[in-house]
Length: 207
DNA sequence: ATGACGATTTACT
DNA sequence: GTAAATCGTCATA
Image (tube, rainbow, N blue to C red; front, side):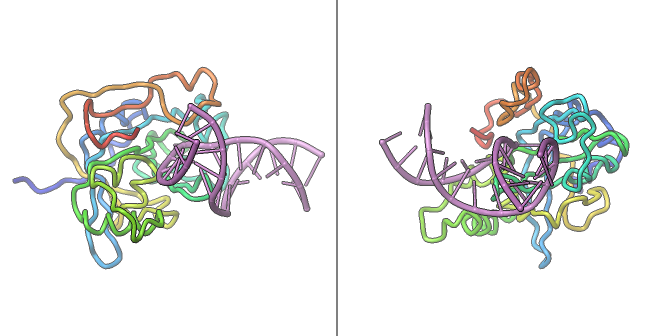
């Protein structure tokens, strides 16, 4: 069994469309302040193509305090808060100043699954009710941030060097499927671009 | 100062 | 299938 290896800084320098596919099968790792390791295999991603992409937070060069991380160097995390209740996590790519990023949409839970159950039921105010299925802990962008305890304090982490959040190499998927991105209906023609990628047939993909 | 909106999730008809 | 929850952000005034 080989030692887990982090994704090298160079790997993040690719364009979002390529990195979105490259990240499938890799492992997202979160280390809590008490040292606990929570992780999952990345099974679904979306590419956001920066200034030309109507669905991107950086469309037309938009640069605000919220999306500042998109302009950081490749390998930086971009975490934002939306709908008044959910966090979403992105991986910034390309060189600094070029705001392309990949949204992580779903994981297959791997390490610290019991802790992930606790986080998720707490965050979604489900304590006392029927527990979630493990396969549904991270089957969506807002769910995986709950389960791995990823919030605004994890924004702008340089993942090749962070001690709290990073990505490790995993197994290359057999079969990658692609289709239109989700939740961006107001993006005009860009809403139809097939920039969402997932491992074909995987049970943890969002729905 | 104001208001429309959101890279979502959940519950309910 | 539809709608509610819930609030920070951003463009406009």
